[in-house]
Amino acid sequence: MTIRILLALALCTSVANADEPAEQIVAKERPDCKPNGAIWVQIDYLDARAKSEQVTATLYGNGATTMTKQRGRAATTTKGQCLAPRQMAYVEGLLEDSPWKVTKPKTAVPCEENTPLSTVVRVHGKKVFTQRGCNPDTLDEKSAQAFEKLKRLLPQALRQECLDNPLAKGCS
Image (tube, rainbow, N blue to C red):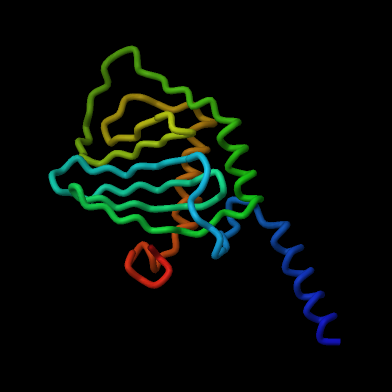
């Protein structure tokens, strides 16, 4: 009787998860989740001010995620959680469907926002776009949407307690 109830609960849970959009499924912690394979996506959050912390979020081909914080020459890398195969298929679709076409303006665009912050996205090792406060370049619509989804999905896989304290148990 107990086994039937557990099987029914497991089935209900898997069916419920099957209906969730892949971008909303929270990554699961797996002990075998170590960064392996090619880097699919790397997002660098950069600050040009002296002695500022630079942060890089990385997604590997096996679904593993990492976050590296660097200040000067000192760096700490925090392991995140693994994306599920369904999430990886979703990310793969985003990457394949996006042309990553950058358009430069034909005339100079006046800059009204001067900020030292920038975000660089790399796909399969190739820099595809740099987002800045004063960047006249624009990304095509499909790629811009994929970029926003990736910026939301990657941090979800990096556990908050590890972001707050990279030295916490299981974080490094």
